[in-house]
Amino acid sequence: MSEVKNAFDSRLITISLSQLLPSRIVQPNALGTPKYLSILASIRELGVIEPLAVHHEPVRSAEQPPKYLILDGHLRLSALKQLGAEHALCLLSTDDEGFTYNRQINRLTPIQESKMIIQAIDRGVSAERIAEVLNVNIDRIRVRQNLLKGIAPEVIDLLKTRMVGQPVFQILRKMKPMRQIEVAEMMISANCYTGRYAQMVLTATRPEDLTDSKNSTEGVSAENIIKMEREMERLYHDYRLVEDTLGETMLVLVVAKGYLSRLLRNEAISAYLQRFEPDLERELVGIMDAVTADARNLERE
Image (cartoon, rainbow, N blue to C red; front, side, top):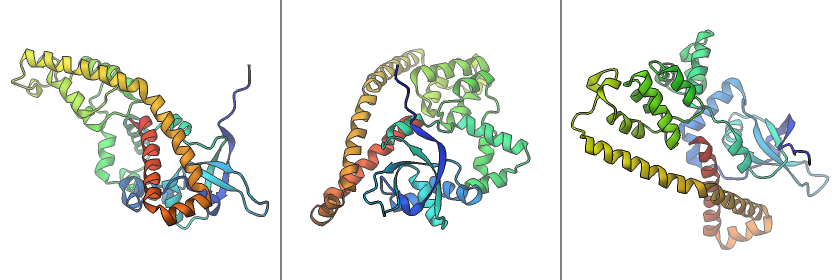
Protein backbone atom coordinates (compact mmCIF):
# COMPACT_ATOMS: atom_id res chain seq x y z
CA MET A 1 0.00 0.00 0.00
CA SER A 2 1.37 3.41 -0.98
CA GLU A 3 2.01 5.99 1.73
CA VAL A 4 -0.63 8.70 2.16
CA LYS A 5 0.64 12.05 0.96
CA ASN A 6 0.45 14.96 3.41
CA ALA A 7 -1.71 17.80 2.15
CA PHE A 8 0.31 20.44 4.06
CA ASP A 9 3.79 20.99 5.39
CA SER A 10 3.94 20.33 9.12
CA ARG A 11 5.67 23.66 9.78
CA LEU A 12 4.28 27.19 9.62
CA ILE A 13 6.34 29.67 7.60
CA THR A 14 6.54 33.47 7.62
CA ILE A 15 6.31 35.00 4.13
CA SER A 16 6.66 38.58 2.94
CA LEU A 17 3.39 40.04 1.66
CA SER A 18 5.15 41.00 -1.58
CA GLN A 19 5.67 37.29 -2.30
CA LEU A 20 1.98 36.39 -2.01
CA LEU A 21 -0.13 36.10 -5.16
CA PRO A 22 -3.93 36.38 -4.74
CA SER A 23 -5.99 33.76 -6.56
CA ARG A 24 -9.06 35.99 -6.56
CA ILE A 25 -9.91 39.68 -6.35
CA VAL A 26 -11.31 41.07 -3.10
CA GLN A 27 -14.07 43.46 -4.10
CA PRO A 28 -13.93 46.94 -2.47
CA ASN A 29 -17.39 46.50 -0.91
CA ALA A 30 -16.10 43.41 0.96
CA LEU A 31 -13.79 45.65 2.98
CA GLY A 32 -16.75 47.27 4.71
CA THR A 33 -18.58 44.10 5.71
CA PRO A 34 -18.95 43.05 9.38
CA LYS A 35 -16.94 39.91 8.65
CA TYR A 36 -13.95 41.88 7.36
CA LEU A 37 -14.12 44.45 10.15
CA SER A 38 -14.17 41.62 12.68
CA ILE A 39 -11.09 40.06 11.07
CA LEU A 40 -9.37 43.45 11.02
CA ALA A 41 -10.06 44.08 14.71
CA SER A 42 -9.01 40.55 15.70
CA ILE A 43 -5.69 40.79 13.85
CA ARG A 44 -5.05 44.24 15.30
CA GLU A 45 -5.59 42.97 18.85
CA LEU A 46 -4.34 39.37 18.71
CA GLY A 47 -2.47 38.88 15.43
CA VAL A 48 -3.23 36.22 12.82
CA ILE A 49 -4.81 33.22 14.55
CA GLU A 50 -5.58 31.16 11.42
CA PRO A 51 -2.58 31.12 9.02
CA LEU A 52 -3.04 31.84 5.33
CA ALA A 53 -3.05 28.70 3.17
CA VAL A 54 -0.59 29.05 0.27
CA HIS A 55 1.04 26.99 -2.45
CA HIS A 56 4.61 27.44 -3.70
CA GLU A 57 4.63 28.69 -7.30
CA PRO A 58 7.37 27.65 -9.77
CA VAL A 59 10.22 30.20 -9.90
CA ARG A 60 10.89 31.52 -13.40
CA SER A 61 14.30 32.91 -12.53
CA ALA A 62 16.81 32.06 -9.82
CA GLU A 63 17.21 35.80 -9.17
CA GLN A 64 13.53 36.26 -8.31
CA PRO A 65 12.27 35.59 -4.78
CA PRO A 66 9.85 32.64 -4.47
CA LYS A 67 6.17 33.35 -5.00
CA TYR A 68 3.22 31.76 -3.21
CA LEU A 69 -0.37 31.45 -4.45
CA ILE A 70 -3.00 32.16 -1.79
CA LEU A 71 -5.54 29.35 -1.50
CA ASP A 72 -7.37 30.75 1.53
CA GLY A 73 -7.00 33.99 3.46
CA HIS A 74 -7.60 36.88 1.07
CA LEU A 75 -9.49 38.95 3.66
CA ARG A 76 -6.74 38.30 6.21
CA LEU A 77 -4.20 39.47 3.63
CA SER A 78 -6.19 42.67 3.00
CA ALA A 79 -6.37 43.29 6.75
CA LEU A 80 -2.63 42.77 7.16
CA LYS A 81 -1.95 45.25 4.37
CA GLN A 82 -4.31 47.80 5.90
CA LEU A 83 -2.54 47.45 9.24
CA GLY A 84 0.84 47.98 7.61
CA ALA A 85 2.20 44.47 8.19
CA GLU A 86 5.08 43.22 6.07
CA HIS A 87 4.86 39.47 6.70
CA ALA A 88 2.16 36.84 7.18
CA LEU A 89 2.11 33.48 8.91
CA CYS A 90 1.32 30.82 6.30
CA LEU A 91 0.51 27.13 5.98
CA LEU A 92 2.19 25.61 2.92
CA SER A 93 0.01 23.30 0.80
CA THR A 94 1.37 20.53 -1.41
CA ASP A 95 -1.41 21.13 -3.96
CA ASP A 96 -2.41 24.26 -5.82
CA GLU A 97 -6.18 24.21 -5.37
CA GLY A 98 -8.24 25.47 -2.47
CA PHE A 99 -11.34 23.27 -2.79
CA THR A 100 -9.96 20.41 -0.68
CA TYR A 101 -8.63 22.82 1.93
CA ASN A 102 -11.91 24.67 2.35
CA ARG A 103 -13.91 21.44 2.44
CA GLN A 104 -11.81 20.16 5.34
CA ILE A 105 -11.95 23.30 7.50
CA ASN A 106 -14.09 22.94 10.61
CA ARG A 107 -15.94 26.25 10.82
CA LEU A 108 -16.86 27.52 14.27
CA THR A 109 -20.50 26.64 14.96
CA PRO A 110 -22.85 28.82 17.06
CA ILE A 111 -22.74 26.34 19.96
CA GLN A 112 -18.93 26.20 19.90
CA GLU A 113 -18.78 30.00 19.71
CA SER A 114 -21.15 30.28 22.68
CA LYS A 115 -19.07 27.86 24.76
CA MET A 116 -15.86 29.74 23.93
CA ILE A 117 -17.40 33.06 24.98
CA ILE A 118 -18.73 31.54 28.22
CA GLN A 119 -15.33 30.01 28.95
CA ALA A 120 -13.54 33.32 28.30
CA ILE A 121 -15.93 35.21 30.58
CA ASP A 122 -15.53 32.56 33.31
CA ARG A 123 -11.77 33.13 33.11
CA GLY A 124 -12.19 36.83 33.77
CA VAL A 125 -12.36 38.33 30.27
CA SER A 126 -15.14 40.91 30.14
CA ALA A 127 -17.86 40.78 27.51
CA GLU A 128 -16.90 44.34 26.54
CA ARG A 129 -13.32 43.25 25.81
CA ILE A 130 -14.50 40.34 23.67
CA ALA A 131 -16.80 42.66 21.71
CA GLU A 132 -13.93 45.10 21.20
CA VAL A 133 -11.56 42.40 19.90
CA LEU A 134 -14.17 41.00 17.52
CA ASN A 135 -15.47 44.45 16.56
CA VAL A 136 -19.07 43.49 17.27
CA ASN A 137 -21.84 45.00 19.36
CA ILE A 138 -21.83 44.03 23.03
CA ASP A 139 -25.43 42.85 22.65
CA ARG A 140 -24.28 40.16 20.23
CA ILE A 141 -21.83 38.84 22.83
CA ARG A 142 -24.61 38.79 25.44
CA VAL A 143 -26.86 36.84 23.06
CA ARG A 144 -24.09 34.30 22.38
CA GLN A 145 -23.41 34.06 26.12
CA ASN A 146 -27.05 33.14 26.85
CA LEU A 147 -27.61 31.12 23.67
CA LEU A 148 -27.76 27.70 25.38
CA LYS A 149 -29.85 28.65 28.40
CA GLY A 150 -33.01 26.53 28.47
CA ILE A 151 -31.62 24.06 25.91
CA ALA A 152 -31.42 20.39 26.88
CA PRO A 153 -27.83 19.04 27.23
CA GLU A 154 -28.67 16.22 24.79
CA VAL A 155 -29.68 18.80 22.17
CA ILE A 156 -26.46 20.74 22.67
CA ASP A 157 -24.49 17.54 22.11
CA LEU A 158 -26.49 16.67 18.97
CA LEU A 159 -26.13 20.12 17.39
CA LYS A 160 -22.66 21.13 18.58
CA THR A 161 -21.05 20.55 15.15
CA ARG A 162 -23.98 21.91 13.11
CA MET A 163 -24.39 25.39 11.67
CA VAL A 164 -27.67 26.10 13.42
CA GLY A 165 -29.44 29.40 12.91
CA GLN A 166 -29.71 31.54 16.04
CA PRO A 167 -33.56 31.76 15.89
CA VAL A 168 -33.68 27.97 16.27
CA PHE A 169 -32.55 28.19 19.90
CA GLN A 170 -35.23 30.76 20.72
CA ILE A 171 -37.85 28.38 19.34
CA LEU A 172 -36.42 25.32 21.08
CA ARG A 173 -36.76 27.06 24.46
CA LYS A 174 -40.52 27.04 23.97
CA MET A 175 -40.50 23.24 24.02
CA LYS A 176 -39.92 20.74 26.78
CA PRO A 177 -36.61 18.79 26.79
CA MET A 178 -37.96 15.59 25.20
CA ARG A 179 -39.57 17.55 22.37
CA GLN A 180 -36.34 19.53 21.92
CA ILE A 181 -34.47 16.26 21.42
CA GLU A 182 -37.05 15.06 18.88
CA VAL A 183 -36.78 18.32 16.94
CA ALA A 184 -32.97 18.20 16.95
CA GLU A 185 -33.07 14.66 15.53
CA MET A 186 -35.58 15.76 12.88
CA MET A 187 -33.32 18.66 11.85
CA ILE A 188 -30.32 16.35 11.56
CA SER A 189 -32.32 13.86 9.50
CA ALA A 190 -33.50 16.61 7.13
CA ASN A 191 -30.13 18.41 7.27
CA CYS A 192 -32.02 21.66 7.78
CA TYR A 193 -31.18 23.99 10.68
CA THR A 194 -33.16 27.13 9.92
CA GLY A 195 -35.55 29.10 12.08
CA ARG A 196 -38.38 28.54 9.57
CA TYR A 197 -38.02 24.78 9.85
CA ALA A 198 -38.02 24.95 13.66
CA GLN A 199 -41.03 27.27 13.62
CA MET A 200 -42.91 24.83 11.38
CA VAL A 201 -42.19 21.99 13.81
CA LEU A 202 -43.26 24.20 16.73
CA THR A 203 -46.57 24.78 14.97
CA ALA A 204 -47.14 21.02 14.79
CA THR A 205 -46.16 20.49 18.44
CA ARG A 206 -48.85 19.45 20.92
CA PRO A 207 -49.55 21.90 23.79
CA GLU A 208 -48.45 19.37 26.42
CA ASP A 209 -44.96 19.33 24.86
CA LEU A 210 -44.55 23.09 25.25
CA THR A 211 -43.18 24.94 28.25
CA ASP A 212 -46.11 27.32 27.99
CA SER A 213 -49.36 26.34 26.31
CA LYS A 214 -49.70 29.96 25.16
CA ASN A 215 -46.85 29.28 22.72
CA SER A 216 -49.04 26.86 20.75
CA THR A 217 -50.35 28.15 17.45
CA GLU A 218 -54.13 28.31 17.44
CA GLY A 219 -56.19 27.71 14.36
CA VAL A 220 -53.98 24.99 12.88
CA SER A 221 -56.12 21.97 12.06
CA ALA A 222 -54.99 18.35 12.03
CA GLU A 223 -55.45 18.36 8.26
CA ASN A 224 -53.05 21.28 7.84
CA ILE A 225 -50.49 19.59 10.05
CA ILE A 226 -50.68 16.44 7.88
CA LYS A 227 -50.17 18.59 4.77
CA MET A 228 -47.14 20.23 6.37
CA GLU A 229 -45.64 16.84 7.19
CA ARG A 230 -46.15 15.65 3.61
CA GLU A 231 -44.58 18.81 2.26
CA MET A 232 -41.59 18.35 4.57
CA GLU A 233 -41.14 14.78 3.35
CA ARG A 234 -41.34 15.85 -0.30
CA LEU A 235 -38.89 18.69 0.30
CA TYR A 236 -36.48 16.33 2.01
CA HIS A 237 -36.67 13.93 -0.97
CA ASP A 238 -35.92 16.78 -3.43
CA TYR A 239 -33.04 17.91 -1.25
CA ARG A 240 -31.49 14.43 -1.30
CA LEU A 241 -31.68 14.34 -5.11
CA VAL A 242 -29.78 17.61 -5.35
CA GLU A 243 -27.28 16.56 -2.68
CA ASP A 244 -26.39 13.38 -4.60
CA THR A 245 -25.15 15.39 -7.58
CA LEU A 246 -23.85 18.49 -5.81
CA GLY A 247 -20.40 17.11 -4.97
CA GLU A 248 -19.67 16.03 -8.55
CA THR A 249 -20.97 19.32 -9.96
CA MET A 250 -18.82 21.37 -7.57
CA LEU A 251 -15.76 19.28 -8.40
CA VAL A 252 -16.22 19.99 -12.12
CA LEU A 253 -16.66 23.71 -11.41
CA VAL A 254 -13.58 23.86 -9.19
CA VAL A 255 -11.44 22.10 -11.81
CA ALA A 256 -12.67 24.54 -14.46
CA LYS A 257 -12.01 27.44 -12.10
CA GLY A 258 -8.45 26.22 -11.53
CA TYR A 259 -7.85 26.06 -15.27
CA LEU A 260 -9.21 29.60 -15.79
CA SER A 261 -7.12 30.85 -12.88
CA ARG A 262 -3.93 29.49 -14.45
CA LEU A 263 -4.84 31.03 -17.81
CA LEU A 264 -5.38 34.45 -16.25
CA ARG A 265 -2.06 34.22 -14.41
CA ASN A 266 -0.38 34.04 -17.82
CA GLU A 267 0.79 37.61 -18.45
CA ALA A 268 0.31 37.43 -22.21
CA ILE A 269 -3.26 36.13 -21.95
CA SER A 270 -4.14 38.56 -19.19
CA ALA A 271 -2.75 41.54 -21.14
CA TYR A 272 -4.65 40.48 -24.26
CA LEU A 273 -7.96 40.19 -22.39
CA GLN A 274 -7.47 43.52 -20.62
CA ARG A 275 -6.82 45.22 -23.95
CA PHE A 276 -9.33 43.56 -26.27
CA GLU A 277 -11.87 41.75 -24.07
CA PRO A 278 -12.15 43.59 -20.72
CA ASP A 279 -15.80 42.59 -20.27
CA LEU A 280 -14.95 38.92 -20.79
CA GLU A 281 -12.14 39.13 -18.24
CA ARG A 282 -14.48 40.65 -15.63
CA GLU A 283 -17.03 37.91 -16.25
CA LEU A 284 -14.41 35.19 -15.87
CA VAL A 285 -13.14 36.68 -12.61
CA GLY A 286 -16.73 36.95 -11.35
CA ILE A 287 -17.39 33.30 -12.18
CA MET A 288 -14.24 32.18 -10.33
CA ASP A 289 -15.20 34.21 -7.27
CA ALA A 290 -18.71 32.69 -7.33
CA VAL A 291 -17.32 29.14 -7.52
CA THR A 292 -14.95 29.86 -4.63
CA ALA A 293 -17.78 31.28 -2.51
CA ASP A 294 -20.04 28.31 -3.27
CA ALA A 295 -17.31 25.82 -2.36
CA ARG A 296 -16.86 27.52 1.02
CA ASN A 297 -20.58 27.73 1.67
CA LEU A 298 -20.84 23.96 1.34
CA GLU A 299 -18.89 23.68 4.58
CA ARG A 300 -20.64 26.50 6.39
CA GLU A 301 -24.20 25.36 5.73
